Length: 209
Image 1 (tube, one colour):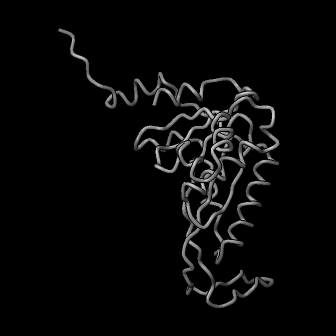
Image 2 (cartoon, rainbow, N blue to C red; image 1 turned 135 degrees about the horizontal axis):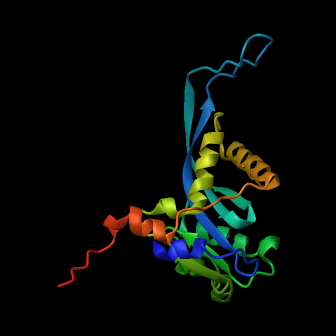
Image 3 (tube, rainbow, N blue to C red; image 1 turned 45 degrees about the horizontal axis):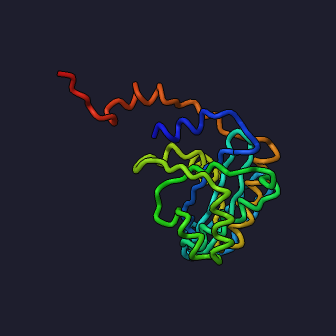
């Protein structure tokens, strides 16, 4: 925990940007009947019946001090899916001049450099891995990931039914553009000092004889 909190305390450095990465499943839900559009004095009406069309996965990378995020929608969240999202992040024009991306993520078994070697040839996998400095949140500590904050905001925005992956991708793209254009960031306030007081129970007890 203190490792991640120490990372968040670093000043912004374009050569070593701090980026949180997370993902979440989203239920795809389609209307059974076409909603009735709003008319003067009458709100838009939507039938209570709906059809479940499975789920899709949303990857999110969030640079809190840079007021920037990137989202991608995939069918699944396999090792290969993670690897491709990370490579796209490393190769993004925004990070062309960065020495490394300081990546904060949870301990899901797909979130490892080994996944890069499952997706790409060894030379390419090493190229991507060498651009990463990975820090893991502790077990049951996903709240320490700034990308989870961004996905929480996304979840509150997805009010309309989205029946397929294309509709979800469109909604995520609009969310990304809006938030980036507005310069929305994450002002992380919780520090190591706070943790030692408020989460004292998580630290080992030391007996002094």
